[in-house]
Length: 240
View (tube, rainbow, N blue to C red):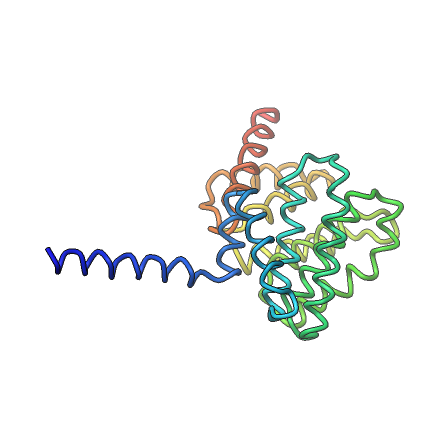
């Protein structure tokens, strides 16, 4: 009986230890993968309450990205609170870069948040943000050439901006590179399919939508991938 109680106590300690050993990075991607809004808000609160000045550059960037992604998928599309959260994310991204100007993830988060804010504000205001977006996303790629999310961001930038900032050729190149780096990231195929529709390359778009339904999603982006698969199914149904 004593041994059984001791074993239970040890298992409890190990369980508690495992819980506290989870890093902000791991927590963020877990909540992001499932679109767990409450979990993301809890992570934000925990990081802020721990003292942002004590966080390293990567954890500060995680805090920034938590604000960005919660605003992106945790709030309704037209919720005015989005802008405040994006602005808060930019503040923390700047602090992360101040802590380590060579932190690739921090530069990616800054650029990605600028992109989200630009989408929210609309095309006219977004053009004034383009230089900052390019600078940080390209810096992220320079520091980490395997950051497939940064390539997707650049692909969308060259696809969705108006002339003379648009380049479908560059958009295609960036999106294909993202797929080459991480074949499990479903949304890279989707963004490329959208590009091919704009270019009237419908057969290639169809192939990508079909591919989307076959892919096992990257574990960091499961909820996003499921939503994209639904879009692909609908597109294929409408274009029989």
